[in-house]
Length: 401
Image (tube, rainbow, N blue to C red):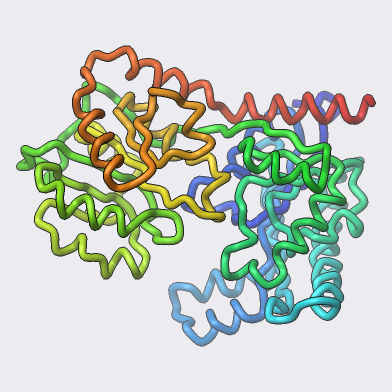
């Protein structure tokens, strides 16, 4: 597409590197942006503490990645999309607070902005939009340093109560919300939180890229599941106690010996030490490739999302639910503001007793129920194209106001 036919030049900064193995809203949106815009995706800069830790733990396998943190690299990954490794190491200042923290944060941002300026000049970006994906530290003063035509802040996770962000995060997020021209969120809860500080806050919903191949007739039963006769209750994703209710799982799996529980994904230290490993009706498979996951999910009688309800999760839109619903499977999930909007397509619970009841109710669902097709259609409607279109419509209205 010729440059003159493109809508905008967009510079994206955020928390996740381009090569992350995790699902990333920002990366998915960047790819959609690049269909009609020129996009510069800036990887997060490294910091002194991280570099020292990597140096002490260095090996030949990570030496190349360690060296790349010191190199400025601008790479074109598609026709209208470039990725910048800024090649700069910022000072680690998170143990400070108040005026010293803000002073050094501004210096870090100035140094970071110089590298971004260099890439902007090389690409001849003009009158660009700055899109900040939830980074209120490294992105705090980039609006002042880069002088974009429009500063957009994307709030897709409530981070300020996580340990790393707790000391300075709340004040920094309030500051960045207040200075943004527009704030976009992926849930009603986060929109309501953001508009306390910025009335120009808008919920554009959540997209979903179904990255798990699915072919209804070609699924092969994985070896670990071939001799299981009990109904299979399955979970796919990172097993982390900050977001998942480990105590509930231990309690219910111990009592419900009539069910077989399968957990697919990497475990944090608490899940690694869990009582679940002692239960004969529980299997941890470890991580599986995207190509293998459809075979496992096809064997699940019920998919679960045993989410904790806390400040880190309360406003979240769980991408996992869309992936489950794409397969039409009955889903049992913790009741949240988001899941309430899904009605009876998801079986919702609030405590261990109700969790067990919802499992029983989900097991009675007819395999030919119309709910299965409704779930698939709903998941397919949650596209990143829809989210980006809503964002652009709001941008146009704002600039034309």
